Length: 346
Image 1: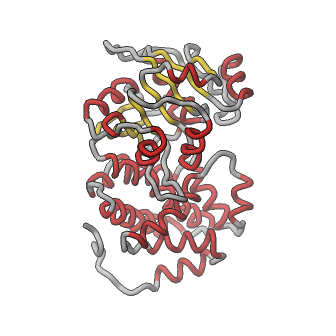
Image 2: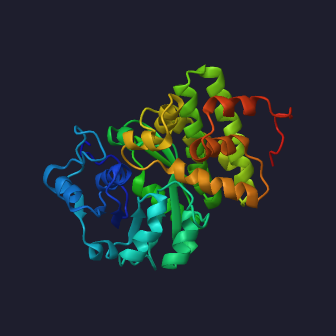
Image 3: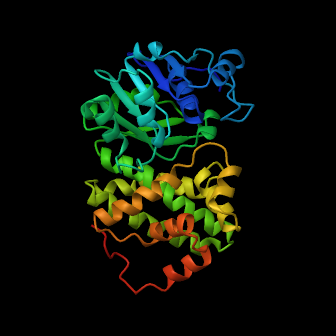
């Protein structure tokens, strides 16, 4: 990433990013470019050493992407605990084990989460995991989310995201830290909506990939995304979200990019399944973590808990974990009882 500070802000922060994957690396570059002191923590020494010595992260990003020279890569938790702001860039299912096995101190500082998922075993959103495991005050919690593939951000492609917090001033701090002329950050106070939008769109992206793999065309994909958004909104609102949030960046915006992008692991896994591969076979072909595979399990149980009908998500669960064929799932969806379009929308 070119090293050019383009916006000048009065405040400079000590920021630690936990998770040296693609998204953690991309956000580290943005924060460093804006003049902040940035530590990038990784669990794997070989990844950290490559970032330090070569300024690349070929395990997670294309080889031609170079990371900002001011980033300090480390495996030392003590360096993270010296930061004023800690960004968690760790897949959802790993957050609780990480906090249980490493002595991170998340109290009395601003915590920013950028993962998108729901914990399988507990059905907890990430803010709820942090409250349970690390006593994170939710007034000091921000979720940064939206349509933002790391590869494009590292290449300075125009990108917009949303920073959501119960304390709008905290959301504005994160907005300031990460705003550049190519990375625009909006603010919101709807934490539930932002978290649920980021999680649920991954489930619909699996279905969108299956549409691609089956070569069903644009009509089917447009219908899938639209009705998928309705499902996302129904469950999110039942859990306390503002329905308008799902029309914004963390809902519709993230849904679109995840359903169409070549960088979307969830879409690609769905596509491979659509061509006839099993879930295990598809997962072996795709590096990294596809949050949607885990999230669909939690969503199935949440839909039951909240008495929300989510036919697309239910069919995706049946395909992934019950051996149902995608063709049969499509037939069952298309032949359901007739309903008005706005049925079930709060």
